[in-house]
Image 1 (cartoon, helix red, strand yellow):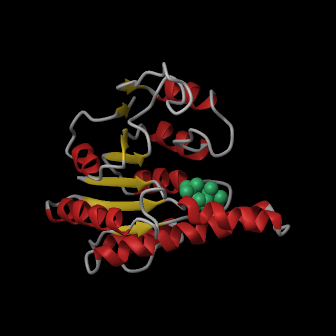
Image 2 (spheres, rainbow, N blue to C red):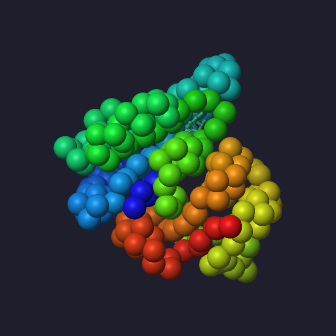
Image 3 (cartoon, protein in one colour):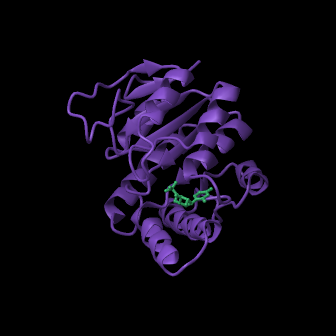
Length: 223
Ligand code: U5P
């Protein structure tokens, strides 16, 4: 089966070498079990620091995004280094490059592609291109909630939802840096191709393995 995994940059970054190692172990095991894997790593705190600095220095939005893209690619390189030699060594910059990397049979590890989206957009595009059976989002929350669980104590986890329901949950919280699981591009891509998305808590990398194997963990978004 082909599975695309998007890991939050809050889990894979230079401050968390132990997590990087655990993710590498889980992903390597899935690869050995025969899963075709593409992994997208977010920019995390490193990206936020560069974006804020570029903004204060007067850089435009596209160039702020370009720094976020490179920060995510650097986090991707960190994970790829831990996965060596099972990962393709170069994070792809585009779908074409991702297809080339995937054709080698190694684990593809990507960061950002182009401005105007997040790494969730990259993950959705890769899931569509690679005909993935599942897109796993390894986030900092346990799943999709009725409201932002970090701000509303009575927020409830939704175990199974459709794309329309996800869209209305995401619309409740549009503040930058808040509860963002998918950007608008990612949402429209998974919806148009009916890609199944499982949202899990990535603080435990084993949740990614559970999701890949089809276990009921976190939330499932499906047609
Ligand atoms: N980014 C892009 N395009 C991509 C991926 C990321 O512009 O394809 C930029 C955005 O500014 C994003 C930041 O907020 O890099 C870090 O990615 P993420 O951790 O928010 O997904």
